[in-house]
Length: 205
Image 1 (tube, helix red, strand yellow):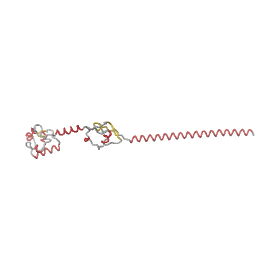
Image 2: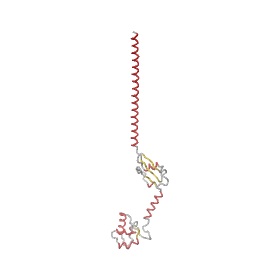
Image 3: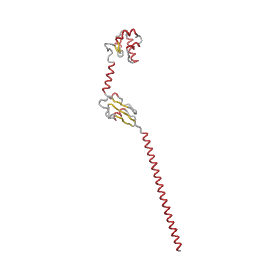
Image 4: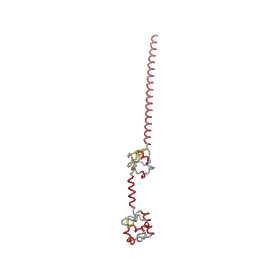
Protein backbone atom coordinates (compact mmCIF):
# COMPACT_ATOMS: atom_id res chain seq x y z
CA UNK A 1 0.00 0.00 0.00
CA UNK A 2 2.84 2.31 0.92
CA UNK A 3 4.62 1.45 -2.32
CA UNK A 4 1.54 2.41 -4.32
CA UNK A 5 1.41 5.79 -2.62
CA UNK A 6 5.06 6.41 -3.38
CA UNK A 7 4.54 5.50 -7.04
CA UNK A 8 1.53 7.83 -7.23
CA UNK A 9 3.54 10.70 -5.76
CA UNK A 10 6.32 10.03 -8.24
CA UNK A 11 3.90 10.04 -11.17
CA UNK A 12 2.28 13.28 -9.97
CA UNK A 13 5.69 14.92 -9.52
CA UNK A 14 6.84 13.89 -12.98
CA UNK A 15 3.53 15.10 -14.42
CA UNK A 16 3.93 18.44 -12.66
CA UNK A 17 7.46 18.89 -14.07
CA UNK A 18 6.26 17.95 -17.54
CA UNK A 19 3.35 20.41 -17.36
CA UNK A 20 5.68 23.20 -16.20
CA UNK A 21 8.04 22.44 -19.07
CA UNK A 22 5.21 22.55 -21.61
CA UNK A 23 3.94 25.87 -20.23
CA UNK A 24 7.44 27.37 -20.21
CA UNK A 25 8.21 26.46 -23.81
CA UNK A 26 4.73 27.54 -24.91
CA UNK A 27 5.08 31.01 -23.37
CA UNK A 28 8.64 31.44 -24.63
CA UNK A 29 7.67 30.50 -28.21
CA UNK A 30 4.73 32.94 -28.16
CA UNK A 31 6.99 35.74 -26.97
CA UNK A 32 9.51 35.06 -29.75
CA UNK A 33 6.74 34.97 -32.35
CA UNK A 34 5.39 38.32 -31.12
CA UNK A 35 8.88 39.83 -31.27
CA UNK A 36 9.33 38.60 -34.85
CA UNK A 37 5.94 40.00 -35.90
CA UNK A 38 6.67 43.34 -34.21
CA UNK A 39 10.09 43.56 -35.86
CA UNK A 40 8.63 42.66 -39.25
CA UNK A 41 5.93 45.33 -38.88
CA UNK A 42 8.53 47.90 -37.89
CA UNK A 43 10.64 47.02 -40.94
CA UNK A 44 7.65 47.31 -43.25
CA UNK A 45 6.64 50.62 -41.67
CA UNK A 46 10.15 52.01 -42.05
CA UNK A 47 10.35 50.82 -45.65
CA UNK A 48 6.99 52.43 -46.48
CA UNK A 49 8.05 55.69 -44.85
CA UNK A 50 11.34 55.63 -46.74
CA UNK A 51 9.55 55.06 -50.04
CA UNK A 52 7.15 57.92 -49.30
CA UNK A 53 10.00 60.30 -48.46
CA UNK A 54 11.84 59.29 -51.65
CA UNK A 55 8.67 59.78 -53.68
CA UNK A 56 8.10 63.21 -52.12
CA UNK A 57 11.65 64.29 -52.87
CA UNK A 58 11.26 63.24 -56.51
CA UNK A 59 8.08 65.23 -57.01
CA UNK A 60 9.43 68.36 -55.29
CA UNK A 61 11.03 70.35 -58.14
CA UNK A 62 13.46 73.19 -57.47
CA UNK A 63 13.96 76.13 -59.86
CA UNK A 64 17.15 78.20 -59.59
CA UNK A 65 17.15 81.86 -60.72
CA UNK A 66 20.11 84.29 -60.54
CA UNK A 67 19.23 87.98 -60.29
CA UNK A 68 21.83 90.75 -60.25
CA UNK A 69 22.21 94.44 -60.96
CA UNK A 70 19.93 97.03 -59.41
CA UNK A 71 18.16 94.93 -56.76
CA UNK A 72 18.71 95.20 -53.01
CA UNK A 73 19.90 91.61 -52.47
CA UNK A 74 21.42 90.12 -55.66
CA UNK A 75 21.97 86.37 -55.66
CA UNK A 76 20.68 82.91 -56.55
CA UNK A 77 17.15 82.13 -55.34
CA UNK A 78 15.15 78.90 -55.44
CA UNK A 79 11.47 78.41 -56.21
CA UNK A 80 9.13 75.42 -56.15
CA UNK A 81 8.04 76.23 -59.72
CA UNK A 82 8.95 78.70 -62.47
CA UNK A 83 8.22 82.16 -60.99
CA UNK A 84 7.15 85.43 -62.58
CA UNK A 85 9.74 88.19 -62.92
CA UNK A 86 8.08 90.19 -60.11
CA UNK A 87 8.37 87.18 -57.73
CA UNK A 88 12.14 87.05 -58.23
CA UNK A 89 12.51 90.81 -57.72
CA UNK A 90 10.48 90.68 -54.50
CA UNK A 91 12.54 87.77 -53.17
CA UNK A 92 15.69 89.79 -53.88
CA UNK A 93 14.38 92.62 -51.71
CA UNK A 94 12.93 94.76 -54.51
CA UNK A 95 14.44 97.32 -56.90
CA UNK A 96 17.01 99.91 -55.89
CA UNK A 97 16.30 103.59 -56.54
CA UNK A 98 18.58 103.49 -59.59
CA UNK A 99 16.80 100.53 -61.23
CA UNK A 100 15.29 100.96 -64.67
CA UNK A 101 11.91 99.34 -64.00
CA UNK A 102 10.59 100.14 -67.47
CA UNK A 103 13.21 97.95 -69.16
CA UNK A 104 11.79 94.69 -67.76
CA UNK A 105 8.53 92.77 -68.08
CA UNK A 106 7.41 92.03 -64.52
CA UNK A 107 4.71 89.61 -65.75
CA UNK A 108 7.18 87.40 -67.62
CA UNK A 109 7.55 83.77 -66.49
CA UNK A 110 11.21 83.02 -65.73
CA UNK A 111 12.67 79.61 -66.64
CA UNK A 112 15.03 77.51 -64.51
CA UNK A 113 18.68 78.57 -64.76
CA UNK A 114 17.93 82.11 -66.00
CA UNK A 115 20.10 85.13 -65.14
CA UNK A 116 18.18 88.39 -64.71
CA UNK A 117 20.14 91.65 -64.91
CA UNK A 118 18.44 94.87 -63.78
CA UNK A 119 20.08 97.88 -65.42
CA UNK A 120 20.43 101.45 -64.17
CA UNK A 121 18.23 104.23 -65.50
CA UNK A 122 21.18 106.20 -66.87
CA UNK A 123 22.21 103.30 -69.10
CA UNK A 124 18.81 103.25 -70.77
CA UNK A 125 18.86 107.04 -71.11
CA UNK A 126 22.33 106.92 -72.65
CA UNK A 127 21.16 104.28 -75.14
CA UNK A 128 18.25 106.50 -76.18
CA UNK A 129 20.57 109.48 -76.60
CA UNK A 130 22.98 107.39 -78.67
CA UNK A 131 20.15 106.13 -80.85
CA UNK A 132 18.83 109.64 -81.44
CA UNK A 133 22.33 110.94 -82.21
CA UNK A 134 22.65 108.52 -85.16
CA UNK A 135 19.69 110.09 -86.92
CA UNK A 136 19.89 113.50 -85.30
CA UNK A 137 20.50 115.46 -88.43
CA UNK A 138 19.28 114.89 -91.97
CA UNK A 139 21.64 117.52 -93.29
CA UNK A 140 24.93 117.13 -91.41
CA UNK A 141 28.59 117.08 -92.47
CA UNK A 142 28.77 120.59 -93.85
CA UNK A 143 25.25 120.66 -95.25
CA UNK A 144 25.23 117.19 -96.85
CA UNK A 145 21.93 115.32 -97.15
CA UNK A 146 21.77 112.15 -95.03
CA UNK A 147 20.21 109.41 -97.16
CA UNK A 148 19.06 107.51 -94.06
CA UNK A 149 17.16 110.33 -92.36
CA UNK A 150 16.28 112.90 -95.02
CA UNK A 151 12.66 113.66 -95.84
CA UNK A 152 11.32 113.61 -99.40
CA UNK A 153 11.55 117.42 -99.56
CA UNK A 154 15.22 117.35 -98.54
CA UNK A 155 16.06 114.61 -101.05
CA UNK A 156 14.40 116.60 -103.83
CA UNK A 157 16.99 119.34 -103.30
CA UNK A 158 19.56 117.01 -104.84
CA UNK A 159 20.32 117.36 -108.54
CA UNK A 160 18.36 114.87 -110.63
CA UNK A 161 16.16 113.70 -107.71
CA UNK A 162 12.49 114.43 -108.21
CA UNK A 163 9.43 113.46 -106.20
CA UNK A 164 9.32 109.93 -107.66
CA UNK A 165 13.00 109.12 -106.96
CA UNK A 166 12.78 110.66 -103.46
CA UNK A 167 9.86 108.34 -102.69
CA UNK A 168 11.90 105.39 -104.05
CA UNK A 169 14.85 106.26 -101.78
CA UNK A 170 12.59 106.37 -98.70
CA UNK A 171 10.87 103.11 -99.72
CA UNK A 172 14.24 101.41 -100.25
CA UNK A 173 15.56 102.25 -96.78
CA UNK A 174 12.26 101.17 -95.17
CA UNK A 175 12.43 97.77 -96.86
CA UNK A 176 16.19 97.13 -96.79
CA UNK A 177 17.36 99.13 -93.82
CA UNK A 178 19.82 102.01 -93.73
CA UNK A 179 22.17 102.81 -96.60
CA UNK A 180 25.63 101.58 -95.62
CA UNK A 181 27.52 103.70 -98.15
CA UNK A 182 26.54 106.50 -100.51
CA UNK A 183 27.12 104.23 -103.53
CA UNK A 184 24.10 102.16 -102.42
CA UNK A 185 21.85 104.88 -103.85
CA UNK A 186 22.61 103.42 -107.27
CA UNK A 187 20.47 100.44 -106.26
CA UNK A 188 17.49 102.73 -106.85
CA UNK A 189 15.93 102.34 -110.30
CA UNK A 190 16.87 105.30 -112.50
CA UNK A 191 19.84 106.41 -110.39
CA UNK A 192 23.05 105.34 -112.08
CA UNK A 193 26.59 106.68 -112.32
CA UNK A 194 25.54 109.81 -114.18
CA UNK A 195 23.14 110.99 -111.46
CA UNK A 196 25.42 109.68 -108.71
CA UNK A 197 28.33 111.72 -110.08
CA UNK A 198 26.26 114.89 -109.69
CA UNK A 199 25.12 114.25 -106.11
CA UNK A 200 27.93 112.24 -104.48
CA UNK A 201 29.49 115.33 -102.89
CA UNK A 202 26.14 116.41 -101.46
CA UNK A 203 25.09 113.17 -99.75
CA UNK A 204 26.18 111.15 -96.72
CA UNK A 205 25.02 108.17 -94.63
